[in-house]
Image (cartoon, rainbow, N blue to C red; front, side):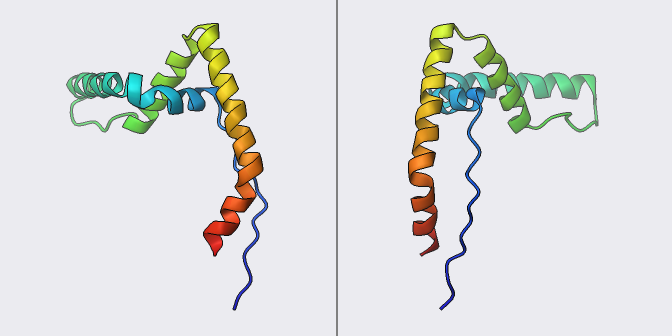
Length: 104
């Protein structure tokens, strides 16, 4: 039987806007992003017929979420930072154990 592969690299910590995305996307922003994406595609296709879109829905969504996070109040940003620290602590305490369990 082969031994377990031990990978020591820690997962990268999420940026603040990514934590905001985790917290708010499904409940607050998904429907709006879907509408904005459809509007963006329609406008692009009208102005650039036969040309491939200059960004994917994923990059569009990321740009949108970054912008919305920057516009948030300090209270919201503070709660995001708190959640970011909680997530970081979870990775620090559980990360190695989870990886070992997945390899079994």
